[in-house]
Length: 262
Image 1 (tube, rainbow, N blue to C red):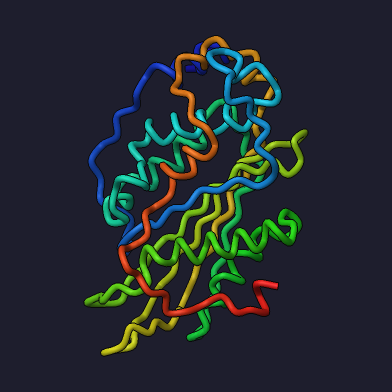
Image 2 (image 1 turned 135 degrees about the vertical axis):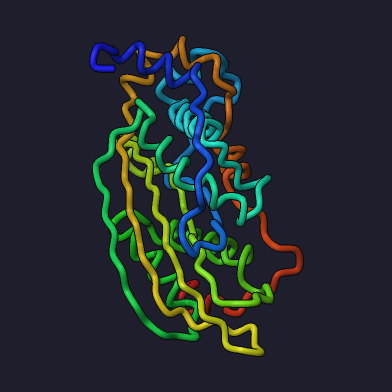
């Protein structure tokens, strides 16, 4: 491994599918609910194909989405088609594959734990929004609030038999500053204690994890021909495939207040 150069690493990442040993899912985690989004402007040229997807600067959002899609395939992590319970098994694989992607460089890895009791579900939204401090414009913040509420529809409103821990995973392509593109992997582990006989949930404890990566556009361009064999995935398509579906007829136990919308 020590003698591998970047060309070998890239080729291995593209062509060699990892094998994962069968292992127990994370302790007490009931399900993983995933959502993907993008901040900034998608400048993609829809007519670009092959190596141009990775070599032309305007296509960088599509290049990043296609790279993320390949990382998900390597991890066997498919939020749109797999249940939240099934995603638990490959959640760690997903984090590992993002970290092993040669076109991303880790710049931040933080974890914090907090406890609180509240029946106001906007507290959850505020806590996750606070992770993006300094990143979101007002319009982005409003879109993010809706995204989190939509994500909640995948879990809230169910009739659980017992308390549970759920991971809310948000993967973000951050193109707010096109000169410094980033990948944000933020996930919150919630211990949700249900009020007996009610659909009401009291959030008892949450752990927030922040992993931030800078994208390496120069390396992507240098490897454009090698990357051209990957399926071309638009940002919109990646968002759909990387997002857990909402539960049919799910009713939220909370609503975003008008004050928070404005």
